[in-house]
Length: 237
Image 1: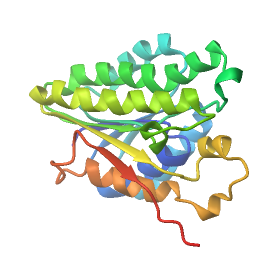
Image 2: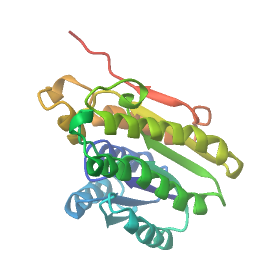
Image 3: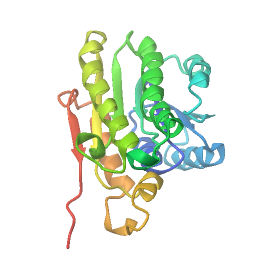
Image 4: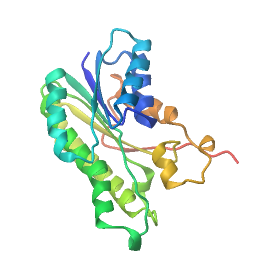
């Protein structure tokens, strides 16, 4: 059945995807990556309640520490040599306008939103090229147009969209499908930093985004790779 690797699985969209996938039966094992080992364990426990036979391991890592990703992925690939899906869901934002943005903030945003997905894709592709698989990259509608005040975040998500489209063609020869989804306003911790005054109850919930992602992971889906799939909930006024 293969193994699914999920980043950002401790909360938000990552946690919602992990919980929904545990009900689907697509995979027999999961590698959950995130900063909070306690919250990752809570996600794993909830998944086990859906299917007690699932094999789940958690790996505590701050994806800003890009020099650690290789070592962690070496452990993941040793524990699970049958990786068939990677979900790059973890993200970061430090919304500041140009004149207030520091190089350190800009680099941190890119390490988590661009460099970490690149490294994770590269390591998983080494395994997946033997049997094929799927890679899901979670970008944002912020990467599709002008977002004044969100320079580092918006440009990093634009880079992830471009990376996804390039890798769709590059990895096709190995039977690896690459999908990119761009959620609109979604009630996550990241969104709270972007729009602190917004009522999270009035916008899309992580579970709604997770449903779309899981539909792409379904073994029956084979036509939507290579596109930037926008997930947006119509606001009711």
